Length: 593
Image 1 (tube, one colour):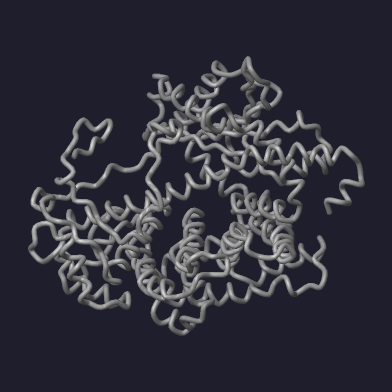
Image 2 (tube, rainbow, N blue to C red):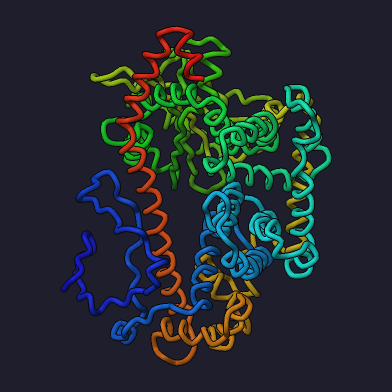
Protein backbone atom coordinates (compact mmCIF):
# COMPACT_ATOMS: atom_id res chain seq x y z
CA UNK A 1 0.00 0.00 0.00
CA UNK A 2 1.27 3.51 -0.75
CA UNK A 3 0.57 6.87 0.84
CA UNK A 4 0.04 9.56 -1.77
CA UNK A 5 0.83 13.10 -0.62
CA UNK A 6 -0.76 15.58 -2.99
CA UNK A 7 1.49 18.35 -4.17
CA UNK A 8 4.76 16.80 -2.98
CA UNK A 9 5.52 14.79 -6.09
CA UNK A 10 6.19 11.43 -4.45
CA UNK A 11 4.39 8.42 -2.98
CA UNK A 12 6.67 6.65 -0.50
CA UNK A 13 5.75 3.12 0.59
CA UNK A 14 3.93 3.17 3.88
CA UNK A 15 6.40 0.68 5.33
CA UNK A 16 9.15 3.29 4.88
CA UNK A 17 7.39 5.90 6.98
CA UNK A 18 8.09 5.79 10.69
CA UNK A 19 5.20 7.55 12.39
CA UNK A 20 5.26 8.54 16.04
CA UNK A 21 2.86 6.23 17.84
CA UNK A 22 0.76 7.18 20.85
CA UNK A 23 -1.91 5.32 22.84
CA UNK A 24 -5.40 5.65 21.41
CA UNK A 25 -6.34 8.13 24.16
CA UNK A 26 -3.77 10.57 22.73
CA UNK A 27 -4.91 10.32 19.14
CA UNK A 28 -7.32 12.74 17.43
CA UNK A 29 -10.93 11.77 17.87
CA UNK A 30 -11.53 11.49 14.15
CA UNK A 31 -9.72 11.71 10.85
CA UNK A 32 -8.76 15.07 9.46
CA UNK A 33 -11.25 16.29 6.83
CA UNK A 34 -9.71 16.47 3.36
CA UNK A 35 -10.19 19.15 0.75
CA UNK A 36 -12.15 16.67 -1.35
CA UNK A 37 -15.06 16.84 1.07
CA UNK A 38 -14.34 20.25 2.59
CA UNK A 39 -13.15 22.42 -0.30
CA UNK A 40 -12.95 25.56 1.87
CA UNK A 41 -11.10 23.82 4.70
CA UNK A 42 -7.53 23.29 3.58
CA UNK A 43 -5.48 23.82 6.74
CA UNK A 44 -1.78 24.62 6.50
CA UNK A 45 -0.80 21.52 8.46
CA UNK A 46 2.91 20.82 8.35
CA UNK A 47 3.94 17.86 6.21
CA UNK A 48 4.07 14.50 7.88
CA UNK A 49 7.47 14.37 9.61
CA UNK A 50 9.80 11.68 8.26
CA UNK A 51 12.58 10.03 10.29
CA UNK A 52 16.07 11.48 10.06
CA UNK A 53 17.69 8.44 8.54
CA UNK A 54 16.94 5.44 6.35
CA UNK A 55 17.95 3.11 9.19
CA UNK A 56 15.27 4.60 11.42
CA UNK A 57 12.67 4.09 8.73
CA UNK A 58 13.23 0.34 8.79
CA UNK A 59 12.62 0.14 12.55
CA UNK A 60 9.28 -0.93 13.92
CA UNK A 61 8.00 2.13 15.79
CA UNK A 62 7.41 1.43 19.47
CA UNK A 63 4.42 3.00 21.12
CA UNK A 64 4.85 5.31 24.09
CA UNK A 65 3.13 3.46 26.91
CA UNK A 66 4.99 4.61 30.04
CA UNK A 67 3.91 7.74 31.94
CA UNK A 68 7.34 9.34 31.69
CA UNK A 69 7.31 9.32 27.89
CA UNK A 70 3.78 10.69 27.74
CA UNK A 71 4.69 13.55 30.07
CA UNK A 72 7.77 14.41 27.99
CA UNK A 73 5.51 14.56 24.93
CA UNK A 74 3.20 16.94 26.82
CA UNK A 75 6.15 18.99 28.10
CA UNK A 76 7.70 19.43 24.65
CA UNK A 77 4.36 20.19 22.99
CA UNK A 78 3.21 22.71 25.62
CA UNK A 79 6.58 24.52 25.71
CA UNK A 80 6.70 24.84 21.91
CA UNK A 81 3.08 26.01 21.74
CA UNK A 82 3.81 28.75 24.26
CA UNK A 83 7.05 29.98 22.72
CA UNK A 84 5.53 30.10 19.23
CA UNK A 85 2.82 32.41 20.55
CA UNK A 86 5.41 34.65 22.26
CA UNK A 87 6.52 36.53 19.15
CA UNK A 88 9.27 38.58 20.77
CA UNK A 89 12.70 37.09 21.40
CA UNK A 90 12.81 34.79 24.43
CA UNK A 91 16.14 34.50 26.18
CA UNK A 92 17.53 31.83 28.45
CA UNK A 93 16.01 33.04 31.71
CA UNK A 94 12.47 33.11 30.33
CA UNK A 95 12.89 29.73 28.61
CA UNK A 96 14.16 28.09 31.79
CA UNK A 97 11.37 29.62 33.88
CA UNK A 98 8.63 28.32 31.55
CA UNK A 99 10.31 24.93 31.20
CA UNK A 100 10.70 24.54 34.97
CA UNK A 101 7.11 25.62 35.57
CA UNK A 102 5.79 23.07 33.06
CA UNK A 103 7.96 20.29 34.55
CA UNK A 104 6.55 21.05 37.99
CA UNK A 105 2.94 21.50 36.89
CA UNK A 106 2.29 18.80 34.29
CA UNK A 107 2.48 15.72 36.60
CA UNK A 108 0.41 17.47 39.29
CA UNK A 109 -2.28 18.70 36.89
CA UNK A 110 -2.51 15.32 35.15
CA UNK A 111 -3.17 13.65 38.50
CA UNK A 112 -6.08 15.95 39.42
CA UNK A 113 -9.73 15.08 38.70
CA UNK A 114 -11.68 16.86 35.97
CA UNK A 115 -12.67 20.44 36.68
CA UNK A 116 -16.36 21.31 37.28
CA UNK A 117 -16.62 22.51 33.67
CA UNK A 118 -15.59 19.05 32.44
CA UNK A 119 -12.09 20.04 31.29
CA UNK A 120 -8.81 18.49 32.39
CA UNK A 121 -6.93 20.80 34.80
CA UNK A 122 -3.89 20.79 32.49
CA UNK A 123 -6.08 21.96 29.62
CA UNK A 124 -7.46 24.79 31.78
CA UNK A 125 -4.01 25.89 32.91
CA UNK A 126 -2.63 25.91 29.36
CA UNK A 127 -5.68 27.80 28.08
CA UNK A 128 -4.91 30.65 30.49
CA UNK A 129 -1.21 30.50 29.61
CA UNK A 130 -2.01 30.72 25.88
CA UNK A 131 -4.18 33.82 26.45
CA UNK A 132 -1.29 35.47 28.29
CA UNK A 133 1.25 34.42 25.64
CA UNK A 134 -0.99 35.85 22.90
CA UNK A 135 -0.97 39.13 24.85
CA UNK A 136 2.87 39.00 24.76
CA UNK A 137 3.13 38.95 28.54
CA UNK A 138 6.47 38.10 30.13
CA UNK A 139 7.45 34.61 31.31
CA UNK A 140 6.69 35.38 34.98
CA UNK A 141 3.04 36.17 34.20
CA UNK A 142 2.66 33.09 32.00
CA UNK A 143 4.31 30.94 34.67
CA UNK A 144 1.84 32.31 37.25
CA UNK A 145 -1.04 31.56 34.86
CA UNK A 146 -0.02 27.90 34.70
CA UNK A 147 0.59 27.57 38.45
CA UNK A 148 -2.66 29.29 39.44
CA UNK A 149 -4.57 26.05 38.73
CA UNK A 150 -2.03 24.02 40.76
CA UNK A 151 -2.14 26.46 43.67
CA UNK A 152 -5.93 26.61 43.69
CA UNK A 153 -6.09 22.81 43.90
CA UNK A 154 -3.90 22.94 47.04
CA UNK A 155 -1.27 20.76 45.35
CA UNK A 156 1.52 23.26 45.99
CA UNK A 157 2.20 26.03 48.50
CA UNK A 158 3.28 29.60 47.89
CA UNK A 159 6.52 28.80 49.72
CA UNK A 160 7.27 25.99 47.25
CA UNK A 161 6.52 28.28 44.29
CA UNK A 162 8.95 30.87 45.69
CA UNK A 163 11.72 28.29 46.21
CA UNK A 164 11.26 26.18 43.08
CA UNK A 165 10.08 28.77 40.52
CA UNK A 166 11.02 32.22 41.75
CA UNK A 167 10.08 35.25 43.80
CA UNK A 168 8.53 37.13 40.87
CA UNK A 169 6.05 34.37 40.04
CA UNK A 170 5.17 33.88 43.71
CA UNK A 171 4.53 37.61 44.10
CA UNK A 172 2.19 37.64 41.08
CA UNK A 173 0.24 34.68 42.43
CA UNK A 174 -0.05 36.33 45.84
CA UNK A 175 -1.30 39.56 44.26
CA UNK A 176 -3.73 37.67 42.05
CA UNK A 177 -5.18 35.66 44.94
CA UNK A 178 -5.86 38.96 46.74
CA UNK A 179 -8.10 39.97 43.81
CA UNK A 180 -10.52 37.06 44.25
CA UNK A 181 -12.84 38.96 46.58
CA UNK A 182 -12.88 42.29 44.73
CA UNK A 183 -16.60 42.11 43.73
CA UNK A 184 -17.61 41.37 47.34
CA UNK A 185 -16.21 44.72 48.51
CA UNK A 186 -19.49 46.42 47.52
CA UNK A 187 -23.09 45.51 48.33
CA UNK A 188 -24.64 46.86 45.11
CA UNK A 189 -22.76 46.69 41.81
CA UNK A 190 -23.98 49.88 40.15
CA UNK A 191 -21.98 52.15 37.81
CA UNK A 192 -20.52 54.22 40.64
CA UNK A 193 -19.36 51.28 42.78
CA UNK A 194 -18.02 49.42 39.71
CA UNK A 195 -15.91 52.48 38.75
CA UNK A 196 -14.60 52.65 42.31
CA UNK A 197 -13.65 48.96 42.24
CA UNK A 198 -11.82 49.37 38.94
CA UNK A 199 -9.81 52.28 40.30
CA UNK A 200 -9.10 50.31 43.46
CA UNK A 201 -7.68 47.42 41.39
CA UNK A 202 -5.45 49.73 39.35
CA UNK A 203 -4.21 51.47 42.48
CA UNK A 204 -3.56 48.62 44.92
CA UNK A 205 -2.65 45.60 42.75
CA UNK A 206 0.26 45.07 40.40
CA UNK A 207 -0.91 45.61 36.82
CA UNK A 208 0.43 42.24 35.65
CA UNK A 209 -1.60 40.50 38.37
CA UNK A 210 -4.67 42.36 37.06
CA UNK A 211 -3.97 41.08 33.54
CA UNK A 212 -3.59 37.55 34.92
CA UNK A 213 -7.02 37.89 36.55
CA UNK A 214 -8.48 39.11 33.25
CA UNK A 215 -7.09 36.04 31.46
CA UNK A 216 -8.58 33.78 34.14
CA UNK A 217 -11.96 35.51 33.81
CA UNK A 218 -11.91 35.15 30.03
CA UNK A 219 -11.14 31.43 30.29
CA UNK A 220 -14.02 30.98 32.75
CA UNK A 221 -16.44 32.95 30.55
CA UNK A 222 -15.56 30.78 27.57
CA UNK A 223 -16.70 27.68 29.50
CA UNK A 224 -19.63 28.91 31.58
CA UNK A 225 -22.43 26.64 30.41
CA UNK A 226 -21.98 24.14 33.25
CA UNK A 227 -23.17 26.65 35.88
CA UNK A 228 -26.82 27.28 36.78
CA UNK A 229 -28.28 30.25 34.90
CA UNK A 230 -28.38 32.49 37.97
CA UNK A 231 -24.65 31.98 38.65
CA UNK A 232 -23.89 32.58 34.98
CA UNK A 233 -25.66 35.93 35.12
CA UNK A 234 -24.00 37.02 38.39
CA UNK A 235 -20.54 36.31 36.99
CA UNK A 236 -21.40 37.88 33.62
CA UNK A 237 -22.56 41.07 35.36
CA UNK A 238 -19.34 41.30 37.38
CA UNK A 239 -17.29 40.81 34.20
CA UNK A 240 -19.27 43.42 32.27
CA UNK A 241 -19.12 46.06 35.00
CA UNK A 242 -15.62 45.49 36.42
CA UNK A 243 -13.33 43.30 34.34
CA UNK A 244 -14.16 44.24 30.73
CA UNK A 245 -13.55 47.98 31.42
CA UNK A 246 -10.40 47.01 33.34
CA UNK A 247 -9.15 45.21 30.23
CA UNK A 248 -9.60 48.47 28.29
CA UNK A 249 -7.73 50.38 31.00
CA UNK A 250 -4.64 48.14 30.90
CA UNK A 251 -4.51 48.18 27.09
CA UNK A 252 -5.78 44.66 26.36
CA UNK A 253 -8.60 45.67 24.03
CA UNK A 254 -9.03 42.23 22.46
CA UNK A 255 -9.77 40.74 25.89
CA UNK A 256 -12.21 43.52 26.67
CA UNK A 257 -14.23 43.01 23.49
CA UNK A 258 -14.53 39.26 24.04
CA UNK A 259 -15.44 39.71 27.72
CA UNK A 260 -18.16 42.18 26.73
CA UNK A 261 -19.61 39.88 24.09
CA UNK A 262 -19.61 36.84 26.38
CA UNK A 263 -21.24 38.83 29.19
CA UNK A 264 -23.85 40.13 26.75
CA UNK A 265 -24.59 36.57 25.62
CA UNK A 266 -25.24 35.30 29.17
CA UNK A 267 -27.05 38.37 30.52
CA UNK A 268 -29.35 38.98 27.54
CA UNK A 269 -29.41 35.76 25.46
CA UNK A 270 -32.40 36.73 23.32
CA UNK A 271 -31.00 40.18 22.52
CA UNK A 272 -27.62 38.62 21.77
CA UNK A 273 -29.22 36.15 19.37
CA UNK A 274 -30.98 38.98 17.53
CA UNK A 275 -27.78 41.00 17.10
CA UNK A 276 -25.66 37.95 16.30
CA UNK A 277 -28.02 36.70 13.61
CA UNK A 278 -28.22 40.14 12.00
CA UNK A 279 -24.42 40.54 11.97
CA UNK A 280 -23.87 37.01 10.66
CA UNK A 281 -26.13 37.78 7.71
CA UNK A 282 -23.65 40.52 6.74
CA UNK A 283 -20.46 38.66 7.69
CA UNK A 284 -20.92 35.39 5.83
CA UNK A 285 -20.54 34.86 2.08
CA UNK A 286 -21.72 31.93 0.00
CA UNK A 287 -18.94 29.56 1.06
CA UNK A 288 -16.81 31.23 3.77
CA UNK A 289 -16.61 34.34 5.97
CA UNK A 290 -16.53 37.55 3.96
CA UNK A 291 -13.58 38.91 5.92
CA UNK A 292 -11.47 35.96 4.76
CA UNK A 293 -12.56 36.50 1.16
CA UNK A 294 -11.64 40.19 1.27
CA UNK A 295 -8.32 39.51 3.03
CA UNK A 296 -7.27 37.04 0.36
CA UNK A 297 -8.43 39.29 -2.47
CA UNK A 298 -6.62 42.40 -1.26
CA UNK A 299 -3.48 40.49 -0.26
CA UNK A 300 -3.04 39.06 -3.75
CA UNK A 301 -3.82 42.45 -5.28
CA UNK A 302 -1.18 44.23 -3.18
CA UNK A 303 1.36 41.45 -3.54
CA UNK A 304 1.21 41.63 -7.35
CA UNK A 305 1.94 45.37 -7.50
CA UNK A 306 5.60 45.89 -8.52
CA UNK A 307 5.82 49.42 -7.11
CA UNK A 308 4.66 48.31 -3.66
CA UNK A 309 6.95 45.25 -3.77
CA UNK A 310 9.94 47.56 -4.25
CA UNK A 311 9.02 49.49 -1.08
CA UNK A 312 8.06 46.71 1.37
CA UNK A 313 9.34 43.24 2.15
CA UNK A 314 6.26 42.01 4.00
CA UNK A 315 2.50 42.63 4.04
CA UNK A 316 0.21 41.38 6.78
CA UNK A 317 -3.55 41.84 6.90
CA UNK A 318 -5.65 41.45 10.02
CA UNK A 319 -9.41 41.18 9.91
CA UNK A 320 -11.97 41.82 12.61
CA UNK A 321 -15.70 41.45 13.05
CA UNK A 322 -17.98 43.86 14.80
CA UNK A 323 -18.43 43.37 18.52
CA UNK A 324 -21.96 42.18 19.35
CA UNK A 325 -22.07 44.27 22.50
CA UNK A 326 -20.86 47.39 20.69
CA UNK A 327 -23.47 46.88 17.96
CA UNK A 328 -26.23 46.56 20.56
CA UNK A 329 -25.14 49.86 22.17
CA UNK A 330 -25.12 51.66 18.82
CA UNK A 331 -28.57 50.39 17.90
CA UNK A 332 -30.22 50.98 21.30
CA UNK A 333 -28.23 53.53 23.28
CA UNK A 334 -27.11 55.69 20.34
CA UNK A 335 -30.39 55.18 18.45
CA UNK A 336 -28.75 54.37 15.12
CA UNK A 337 -30.60 52.67 12.29
CA UNK A 338 -29.19 49.32 11.09
CA UNK A 339 -27.94 50.88 7.86
CA UNK A 340 -25.98 53.44 9.92
CA UNK A 341 -23.81 50.75 11.55
CA UNK A 342 -21.01 50.90 9.00
CA UNK A 343 -18.06 49.21 10.70
CA UNK A 344 -19.31 45.61 10.67
CA UNK A 345 -16.25 44.48 8.73
CA UNK A 346 -12.76 45.88 9.20
CA UNK A 347 -9.25 45.24 7.87
CA UNK A 348 -5.90 46.46 9.10
CA UNK A 349 -3.06 46.37 6.57
CA UNK A 350 0.42 46.44 8.10
CA UNK A 351 3.38 47.12 5.80
CA UNK A 352 6.99 46.41 6.70
CA UNK A 353 9.19 48.80 4.66
CA UNK A 354 12.52 47.60 3.33
CA UNK A 355 15.39 48.57 5.67
CA UNK A 356 17.56 51.58 5.01
CA UNK A 357 18.17 55.17 6.05
CA UNK A 358 14.97 56.28 4.33
CA UNK A 359 12.82 53.43 5.69
CA UNK A 360 10.38 55.82 7.39
CA UNK A 361 9.82 57.86 4.23
CA UNK A 362 9.53 54.65 2.20
CA UNK A 363 6.95 53.33 4.66
CA UNK A 364 4.83 56.48 4.30
CA UNK A 365 4.93 56.20 0.51
CA UNK A 366 3.97 52.51 0.73
CA UNK A 367 0.89 53.42 2.79
CA UNK A 368 -0.27 55.95 0.20
CA UNK A 369 0.43 53.49 -2.63
CA UNK A 370 -1.68 50.88 -0.83
CA UNK A 371 -4.53 53.37 -0.52
CA UNK A 372 -4.37 54.06 -4.27
CA UNK A 373 -4.54 50.34 -5.03
CA UNK A 374 -7.56 49.86 -2.77
CA UNK A 375 -9.28 52.82 -4.43
CA UNK A 376 -8.88 51.02 -7.76
CA UNK A 377 -10.31 47.82 -6.28
CA UNK A 378 -13.36 49.16 -4.43
CA UNK A 379 -15.31 52.40 -4.34
CA UNK A 380 -14.06 54.65 -1.53
CA UNK A 381 -16.44 56.78 0.56
CA UNK A 382 -14.58 60.14 0.58
CA UNK A 383 -16.12 61.68 3.69
CA UNK A 384 -15.04 58.67 5.79
CA UNK A 385 -11.34 59.01 4.85
CA UNK A 386 -8.81 60.24 7.46
CA UNK A 387 -5.11 60.87 6.92
CA UNK A 388 -3.36 60.57 10.28
CA UNK A 389 0.03 60.22 8.56
CA UNK A 390 0.05 63.77 7.23
CA UNK A 391 -1.77 65.02 10.36
CA UNK A 392 -0.96 62.74 13.32
CA UNK A 393 -3.14 62.74 16.43
CA UNK A 394 -1.84 64.60 19.51
CA UNK A 395 -0.77 61.28 21.09
CA UNK A 396 1.43 60.47 18.06
CA UNK A 397 -1.00 58.07 16.37
CA UNK A 398 -0.30 57.74 12.60
CA UNK A 399 -2.35 55.71 10.11
CA UNK A 400 -4.56 55.99 7.03
CA UNK A 401 -8.26 55.29 7.54
CA UNK A 402 -10.73 54.69 4.74
CA UNK A 403 -14.14 53.12 4.16
CA UNK A 404 -15.03 51.26 0.98
CA UNK A 405 -18.22 49.92 -0.55
CA UNK A 406 -17.86 46.15 -1.08
CA UNK A 407 -21.39 45.62 -2.37
CA UNK A 408 -21.73 43.46 -5.47
CA UNK A 409 -24.42 42.95 -8.07
CA UNK A 410 -26.18 40.35 -5.96
CA UNK A 411 -26.28 42.11 -2.63
CA UNK A 412 -25.79 45.46 -0.92
CA UNK A 413 -23.37 45.22 1.99
CA UNK A 414 -22.36 47.62 4.78
CA UNK A 415 -19.18 49.63 4.31
CA UNK A 416 -15.87 48.02 5.23
CA UNK A 417 -13.37 50.06 7.22
CA UNK A 418 -9.67 49.74 6.36
CA UNK A 419 -6.63 50.97 8.29
CA UNK A 420 -3.24 51.20 6.57
CA UNK A 421 -0.03 51.59 8.55
CA UNK A 422 3.60 50.47 8.82
CA UNK A 423 4.89 48.08 11.49
CA UNK A 424 6.37 51.06 13.36
CA UNK A 425 3.03 52.90 13.26
CA UNK A 426 1.27 49.76 14.48
CA UNK A 427 3.62 49.41 17.43
CA UNK A 428 3.16 53.09 18.28
CA UNK A 429 -0.62 52.70 18.02
CA UNK A 430 -0.57 49.91 20.61
CA UNK A 431 1.43 52.11 22.98
CA UNK A 432 -0.36 55.31 22.10
CA UNK A 433 -3.85 54.10 22.97
CA UNK A 434 -3.23 54.26 26.72
CA UNK A 435 -5.26 57.43 27.19
CA UNK A 436 -8.22 56.14 25.15
CA UNK A 437 -8.08 52.74 26.80
CA UNK A 438 -7.89 54.22 30.28
CA UNK A 439 -10.86 56.46 29.53
CA UNK A 440 -12.93 53.40 28.66
CA UNK A 441 -11.63 51.73 31.82
CA UNK A 442 -12.88 54.53 34.01
CA UNK A 443 -9.77 56.73 34.11
CA UNK A 444 -10.36 60.19 32.69
CA UNK A 445 -7.13 61.80 33.93
CA UNK A 446 -4.39 61.60 31.23
CA UNK A 447 -1.67 61.82 33.91
CA UNK A 448 -3.16 58.78 35.63
CA UNK A 449 -3.06 56.93 32.32
CA UNK A 450 0.64 57.81 31.88
CA UNK A 451 1.36 56.64 35.42
CA UNK A 452 -0.38 53.33 34.74
CA UNK A 453 1.64 52.76 31.58
CA UNK A 454 4.90 53.66 33.36
CA UNK A 455 4.18 51.17 36.16
CA UNK A 456 3.45 48.43 33.62
CA UNK A 457 6.71 49.05 31.73
CA UNK A 458 8.69 49.17 34.98
CA UNK A 459 7.25 45.82 36.10
CA UNK A 460 8.17 44.21 32.79
CA UNK A 461 11.72 45.63 32.92
CA UNK A 462 12.14 44.43 36.51
CA UNK A 463 11.01 40.93 35.50
CA UNK A 464 13.55 40.97 32.65
CA UNK A 465 16.32 41.90 35.10
CA UNK A 466 15.30 39.09 37.47
CA UNK A 467 15.39 36.58 34.63
CA UNK A 468 18.59 37.97 33.17
CA UNK A 469 16.80 38.66 29.90
CA UNK A 470 18.06 41.07 27.29
CA UNK A 471 15.59 42.23 24.61
CA UNK A 472 17.82 41.13 21.75
CA UNK A 473 18.96 37.92 23.38
CA UNK A 474 18.00 34.52 22.09
CA UNK A 475 20.48 32.31 23.88
CA UNK A 476 20.08 29.29 26.09
CA UNK A 477 23.06 28.45 28.23
CA UNK A 478 25.35 30.47 25.99
CA UNK A 479 24.29 28.60 22.83
CA UNK A 480 22.40 30.49 20.16
CA UNK A 481 19.07 28.72 19.74
CA UNK A 482 16.05 29.15 17.55
CA UNK A 483 12.62 28.24 18.79
CA UNK A 484 12.88 24.60 17.76
CA UNK A 485 16.32 24.11 19.37
CA UNK A 486 15.32 25.63 22.69
CA UNK A 487 13.95 22.44 24.30
CA UNK A 488 16.95 20.46 23.07
CA UNK A 489 19.42 22.81 24.79
CA UNK A 490 17.34 22.85 27.99
CA UNK A 491 17.51 19.04 28.13
CA UNK A 492 21.19 18.93 27.12
CA UNK A 493 22.36 20.08 30.53
CA UNK A 494 26.07 19.43 30.06
CA UNK A 495 26.10 21.27 26.73
CA UNK A 496 27.84 18.52 24.74
CA UNK A 497 25.37 18.73 21.85
CA UNK A 498 23.58 15.45 22.63
CA UNK A 499 20.87 14.28 25.06
CA UNK A 500 22.15 11.26 26.95
CA UNK A 501 20.02 8.56 28.54
CA UNK A 502 21.04 9.96 31.96
CA UNK A 503 19.78 13.44 31.04
CA UNK A 504 16.54 11.93 29.73
CA UNK A 505 16.15 9.94 32.97
CA UNK A 506 16.69 13.13 34.98
CA UNK A 507 13.84 14.99 33.26
CA UNK A 508 11.58 11.92 33.68
CA UNK A 509 12.27 11.91 37.42
CA UNK A 510 11.65 15.68 37.60
CA UNK A 511 8.26 14.98 36.02
CA UNK A 512 7.59 12.45 38.79
CA UNK A 513 7.97 9.36 36.59
CA UNK A 514 10.37 6.43 36.75
CA UNK A 515 13.73 7.10 35.22
CA UNK A 516 13.49 3.74 33.48
CA UNK A 517 10.74 5.19 31.29
CA UNK A 518 13.52 7.02 29.46
CA UNK A 519 14.61 3.79 27.76
CA UNK A 520 11.30 3.57 25.88
CA UNK A 521 11.54 7.12 24.57
CA UNK A 522 15.21 6.70 23.69
CA UNK A 523 14.37 3.55 21.71
CA UNK A 524 11.72 5.48 19.79
CA UNK A 525 13.75 8.57 18.93
CA UNK A 526 17.36 7.28 18.77
CA UNK A 527 17.56 6.68 14.99
CA UNK A 528 21.16 5.42 14.86
CA UNK A 529 20.99 3.45 18.13
CA UNK A 530 24.06 5.13 19.64
CA UNK A 531 22.39 5.62 23.04
CA UNK A 532 21.95 9.40 22.79
CA UNK A 533 19.88 11.94 20.85
CA UNK A 534 21.31 14.45 18.40
CA UNK A 535 19.59 17.76 17.68
CA UNK A 536 18.39 16.30 14.36
CA UNK A 537 16.85 13.26 16.04
CA UNK A 538 15.18 15.36 18.71
CA UNK A 539 13.89 17.83 16.14
CA UNK A 540 12.21 14.93 14.33
CA UNK A 541 10.57 13.95 17.64
CA UNK A 542 9.37 17.54 18.17
CA UNK A 543 7.86 17.65 14.70
CA UNK A 544 6.00 14.41 15.42
CA UNK A 545 4.62 15.94 18.63
CA UNK A 546 3.62 19.15 16.83
CA UNK A 547 1.95 17.14 14.08
CA UNK A 548 -0.24 15.24 16.54
CA UNK A 549 -1.16 18.37 18.53
CA UNK A 550 -1.99 20.16 15.28
CA UNK A 551 -4.40 17.38 14.35
CA UNK A 552 -6.11 17.60 17.73
CA UNK A 553 -6.46 21.38 17.43
CA UNK A 554 -7.89 21.03 13.93
CA UNK A 555 -10.31 18.38 15.14
CA UNK A 556 -11.61 20.78 17.81
CA UNK A 557 -11.83 23.58 15.26
CA UNK A 558 -13.72 21.48 12.72
CA UNK A 559 -15.97 20.11 15.45
CA UNK A 560 -16.99 23.63 16.46
CA UNK A 561 -17.51 24.67 12.84
CA UNK A 562 -19.60 21.60 12.05
CA UNK A 563 -21.63 21.98 15.23
CA UNK A 564 -22.36 25.59 14.28
CA UNK A 565 -23.26 24.73 10.69
CA UNK A 566 -25.45 21.76 11.61
CA UNK A 567 -27.39 23.88 14.12
CA UNK A 568 -27.67 26.89 11.82
CA UNK A 569 -30.93 25.77 10.27
CA UNK A 570 -32.56 25.27 13.65
CA UNK A 571 -31.18 28.57 14.91
CA UNK A 572 -32.54 30.41 11.89
CA UNK A 573 -35.92 28.82 12.42
CA UNK A 574 -35.86 29.73 16.09
CA UNK A 575 -35.07 33.32 15.24
CA UNK A 576 -38.00 33.48 12.87
CA UNK A 577 -40.38 32.16 15.52
CA UNK A 578 -38.98 34.55 18.13
CA UNK A 579 -39.37 37.54 15.84
CA UNK A 580 -42.98 36.56 15.25
CA UNK A 581 -43.53 36.30 19.01
CA UNK A 582 -41.79 39.59 19.55
CA UNK A 583 -44.06 41.32 17.05
CA UNK A 584 -47.17 40.00 18.80
CA UNK A 585 -46.80 42.45 21.66
CA UNK A 586 -46.02 42.59 25.35
CA UNK A 587 -47.90 39.42 26.24
CA UNK A 588 -45.43 37.27 24.37
CA UNK A 589 -42.53 39.05 26.03
CA UNK A 590 -43.91 38.39 29.50
CA UNK A 591 -44.45 34.75 28.65
CA UNK A 592 -40.91 34.38 27.39
CA UNK A 593 -39.44 35.87 30.56
